Image (cartoon, rainbow, N blue to C red; front, top):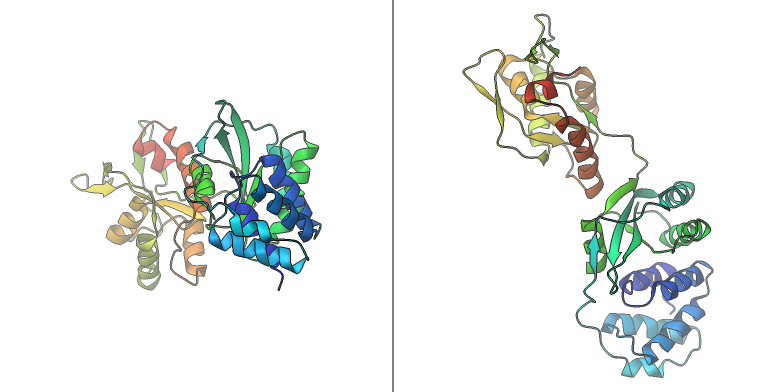
Length: 322
């Protein structure tokens, strides 16, 4: 029985960094065009030239070759792959083709995030590699072909790796993602919850006397949700309680992927029943589950909000802005 296109796509993902970029792009185009015999024939030839494969890769390629009537005898003698090639990646990479890659990703749909990383070649030049995290029901084969086509049309090398979100298939992809820059994602920006009602002329934050208080039932739901969310940025910093200066307020930042809030929100709700940002309250009330774990994209979006926040001069200004 012939392997299905998604299985062949996974095989080609595993070969990233092990065969040339040009060969890999051609094979992915063949896969999108349903030319599986060409994929098998090309890889068998590559094995004859020294391409090393793992046992599962040999088995899949053997099945593919047999399904298309190709001579797979050379695979029995294929060198066996052990350690992956030691590729190095850097955050420095050219953004020239970002728009073309993003347009292609948006046109096809099913993309959760488009990332860019710089692969350092043997000549110490940096080669741009795009990485696409796709939804579980996305057609990875079509996505790959369309983004390759978009990159080629923009005059860029079609180096793009497409895989399901939070499931980078190899060390090659993990290394690339570790130094990557988020180029595009379809979700709206994360929102930062306001803590205070404002700040005075000296920058000291305050609550207005008529600041809303949370009712008991709503308060308990809010407290549980706010405290159980993952920490997006931990800090040892504290600030004085603006109502009781003898107490200190923790300043960790948490997120559920949609909102980002400071632990001060929880503190003032718990101690003084001061209601959080009304839009955050509505979001929590509407949530049917506890806050999810933060994925790579969620964390990146949260950190983007906090990077903007860090540009303000003091904790009081940061938390007291309107």
